Image 1 (tube, rainbow, N blue to C red):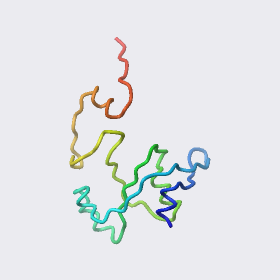
Image 2 (cartoon, helix red, strand yellow; image 1 turned 30 degrees about the vertical axis):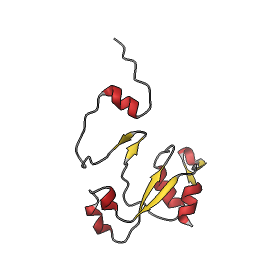
Image 3 (cartoon, rainbow, N blue to C red; image 1 turned 180 degrees about the vertical axis):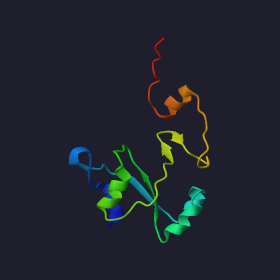
Image 4 (cartoon, rainbow, N blue to C red; image 1 turned 135 degrees about the vertical axis):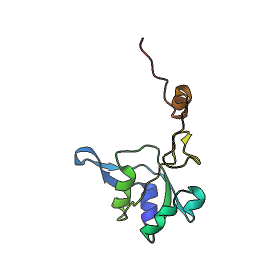
Length: 117
């Protein structure tokens, strides 16, 4: 029931206490999070939990956490795997990968900024 609600949209509070119904999203239960994201080994201390992949078409402030609360579940850990076409891949936590500005803006599907001289 919770998964169905999350997939089809739940009502959350956004700015100024305004209600917002989230659009439908893709949601998948992950049985082996270490196979998807190998840096999850420290999650064992959390005890029993369920890992989900949620694909949003837009994101409001703390939307995923608020969506989980709306269906009476807690979000104990949140890992962003991608934004648009910019994917985390196998980049370990704490490591930085430099990307050319042009490529960065292309992957995010936004226009290249205009530089003033």
